[in-house]
Image 1 (cartoon, rainbow, N blue to C red):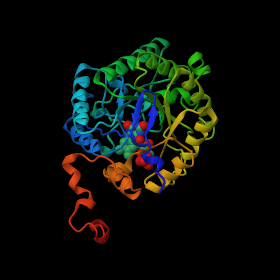
Image 2: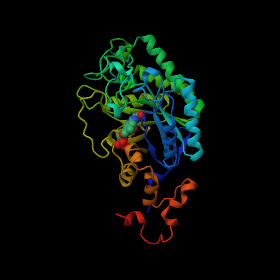
Image 3: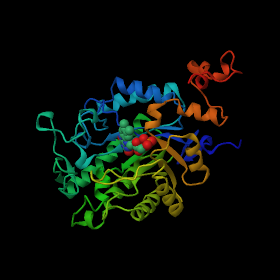
Image 4: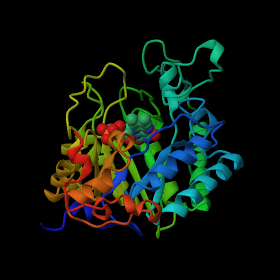
Length: 370
Ligand SMILES: Cc1cc2nc3c(=O)[nH]c(=O)nc-3n(C[C@H](O)[C@H](O)[C@H](O)COP(=O)(O)O)c2cc1C
């Protein structure tokens, strides 16, 4: 069997990923005023054992008001920084594989309930806060009407992105990923559905996100990696399009970003999204083909052969997976076995490899158990 692309190392910026499986950022809604908790230690511990080429810590917010929920992580205080440093140390104690963090701001989608309490806008008795956005347009019915950001407030937000990036640098992350997708603040500026300003931030909807990207690039070391997650479409007539995404990607490339993860949706609640295995891969392919920047495909990719086929056919350079890795944190180990590739296990768990089981010449127990 030829060596699978999935297990071929890849260099992004100054960082080498030992394989091309990336654990996508996933909010855990378990922080306390932005500080990672014991849950995060357990979660990062589990993800550190996974063997994935890169683990990206959940959307971590540049201000308290930028959190989606009361449980979201932040990098806006020394306490936040200390708690995250502890969690990253734990990760590093388990694996040499790189670790990144996604940095963002929820804008008009902030001040909401954690999913398991409904996921709607916080009610009056749930300590809601004033949300902010490019325009005073609510995300949907029943959502908070955001305050329209002044130019001065926009400037201070660029500074907040830089301050959080400096904290990520001190913590020692290998990779920072800017969250410019899924209808959060940066994407709210990009999409005509949420940005109806008449000043230069509305006439040029990319202005604020590009200012953020350029300011973060200035302070993020070249020997690490700086990437971004963008939307390719809002899936709504009159919204952000794949062609817009290519124009944006070219500008990001010019600023010097090292990779782009191409996602979609979540700009407005009423979008009809044709969800199916690999439904966003074509967007990553378009961005890759038209710009040449390294791309990551994401969305409903759970089968190792499917992931391999996406990479081998040159549609993307990396695969990000979210739910499949929560469902099965040993996904990478089993994919490696399927392709006959040897990867490092944590030594404490090494004996779990079925080839070391007595009687391993027989069929593997997992497969005979059904
Ligand atoms: C529990 C959970 C939390 C998520 N949190 C984030 C996040 O913090 N940032 C982000 O960009 N996407 C987030 N997502 C979206 C995932 O990163 C991913 O794009 C999406 O789930 C599609 O990939 P999948 O089909 O492999 O799950 C989250 C998804 C889940 C399931």
